[in-house]
Image 1 (spheres, rainbow, N blue to C red):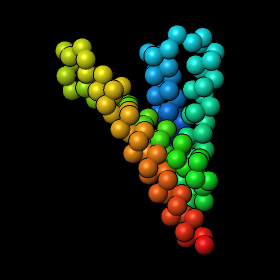
Image 2 (cartoon, rainbow, N blue to C red):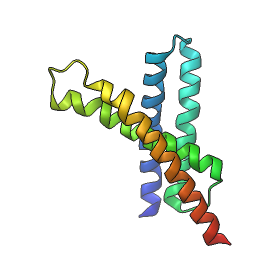
Image 3 (tube, rainbow, N blue to C red):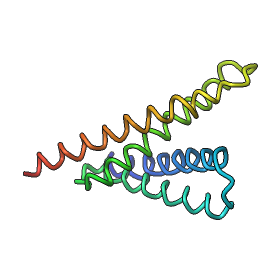
Length: 127
């Protein structure tokens, strides 16, 4: 079962973080497309790789766990906060702002804390 979950979860996290980072960069910066695409792909690759390690139960470096957790949970919260208001109430103009200004920062902070806790528990188990 784990062998089936690893590619599915990793791909979903890759796509979620790719959407998250590319949308945030498009909204907040006026950087060239190639730079936004490269940064988005790098962050999404890191999140997909960390999700692969997370599902397989492998030990992760603390810094990678913190960054990966922040990207994964920040991306999930952003996607839910960005798309859910549009699906629930189609006549609101500022519904996606919940995902941008509230859900994504909360997800990034919670993901970073969760990644640190995960890495410290894995380090304690291996000692």
